[in-house]
Image 1 (cartoon, one colour):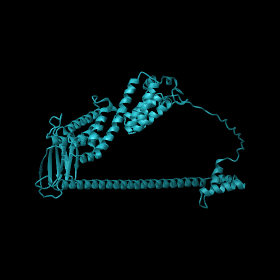
Image 2: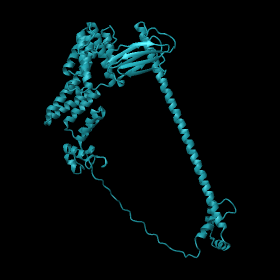
Image 3: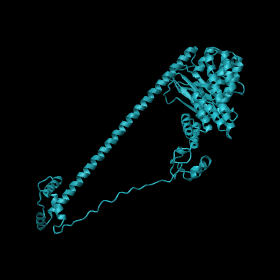
Image 4: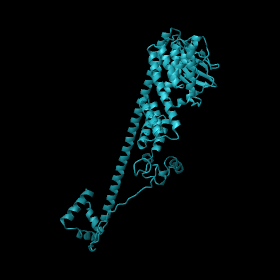
Amino acid sequence: MIHSSYAWRETDSNVELTVPLKGCSPKSLDILLCRNHIKLSCSPFLLDLPLKHDIDVDSVESKAVLNNGTLHITLAKLSEGVIWGELLFEGTKEEINQRREAAFAERTARIQRQHEKRMEQRIEDERMALKMQMALEEDERQLIEVKKTTEKKEAEEALYKTLADLPPAAAARIRADQPDSDNDANSSDEATDTTSSTSDSVPISTVISTARPSALPTQHVSIPPPRATIRATFQHTARPFQTPARESTVSTEREFLLKNNPSLLNGGAGAGNGAPGSNDIGDVDASWIAKKGEEFHNAGDYSSAASAFSSSMKKDSTMVETLVHRAASYLQLGDAEHCLADLVSAEKGVEVSPGGNDASIRHKIELIRAIVSAQQQKEKADQRLKSGDTSGALLLYDEAISMAPAFIPAVANRSACHLAMSDFRASVTDCTAALDMLEKSDSDDPSLDESSSFQPRLEVEVRKKLKDAVLRRRVLALKQLGQSEGPNEGDAKETARAEEDTGVDRVVAELDSVD
């Protein structure tokens, strides 16, 4: 990490910084701005400045622009008109740390308040939107009710007008056709009550009577018997892959089946290792489930990968390589017990059912077991180092690295052990090796040791902390050796801030923070 140089000037209202960052892209630039502190990082550059006075971080004038490899930062002064004279705050290290912590705490609280304010505004906006929607729906409902009432009134008026225009002879015939039975009268009364509310209205039964001539003879219609009930059965075309035909890739599916289970090509029902009558390849083919487990593992979903490998083994317990893959997933999950158990079962499987791929399987078993053993030795070494037994810790670190030379955590922590023992040259060597392996693992460099592909993957945050810790250790060791350049670094100068204390307490505290 290189401390970047900078230039600054001030006006009555602003402080302006100019920082050269050659080769730095805006995506990799990270700026942290507090009330009296500014920190920026853009690998391999780092700048950490405790400011003499406070700045207004919320001002629109506080901004940063990266142009042609130069970062221009404008900071608005909190007290306009005050001339600083000096950019940096001068004081003891403890005072600087206290100001920094207070500024970071204030920044965290300000971000939290802004977040809460945004959430409250969002809730209020949603509430207003809901009220507006409800008001709109109420207006629409009232409009529909008005239209229904108007249409009903117009229909009734048209009906009453038609009845009023009937000639006297038609009216007499209507009265003569009125039914005399009580049931018909009751029905007429009910119909009249539902459609008329005035004493002058004509009953609806009268309208119905005008629509049927009284002279028509009564007709008797026979109703046919109900049709017989039948059961229709539909059967879809059997497909090993449960995907719609319009979305499937037939050639790819056929190629997979030819490689893994040709018996599924002719319909597939009940073929393979699964349940009889199943049409889903996930139910009948163990190799397909194992392939899905490998996809989960490569994507970093190790829990799902272990579950898929277990399902595959239930359908075909002779798949030794699947056991090895599940052991690799358990290793990533930190489950050493199940990992070693799968390795033992895989070795027995190779002995019972030898095949053409035995050499590769045995090699993978040895690599995974070596990493598990190295990890266990590294954990023991960490405990020794934390307890102050640096010599015992160094022996255990050496054993772990001899088992897995590319085991990055062991190499990184051995550098801390060398530093605690004041073996600065050895510490620089281990730091350089650890940084080189971290960089190669980021880019999947093929020159890495083969065992690196099975190493437990470090999360991004843990990886960053480990890299920063190794960089600090190398700076400390180089400082003790009186050097300003790290090996194989060219013109890159290690100018990061570092403590003079290289004792066990310092190293143990750093190990705890990284682990």
